[in-house]
Amino acid sequence: QVQLVESGGGLVQAGGSLRLSCTVSPGRTFSRSSMGWFRQAPGKDRDIVAAISRSGYNTFYADSVKGRFTISRDNAKNMIYLEMNSLKPEDTAVYYCAADINAILTSPPQTRDSGYDYWGQGTQVTVSS
Image 1 (cartoon, helix red, strand yellow):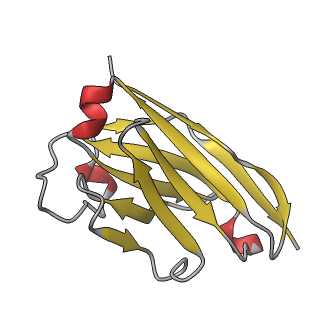
Image 2 (image 1 turned 90 degrees about the horizontal axis):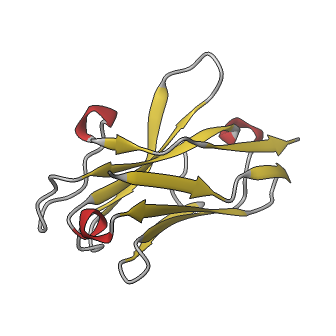
């Protein structure tokens, strides 16, 4: 059974930083997956934040986080990360990691949530002003 578990959320002041982590099991699932981070604020749709291809060479960022957030993956640990800097109150949301287990090695990652097969339970990020 595929499982994704996020961690690292919390409360931070505007301008601060957080690093989210997502562990994927089993490992063979992670190795064939491109991965994404999404977020959902109260009363709003779930939106893509960042995504990374199977190879790790291709990444995508939403315009709202470009230059502030960095997505990365550690294939040895079956984990992805989202480094979030210069956080703003509008970054407040539940953050989810997701796996596209049918990703092609050389293809860029999916940017729509419908392209992902498995999801974590989410981790809350709250940025105070």
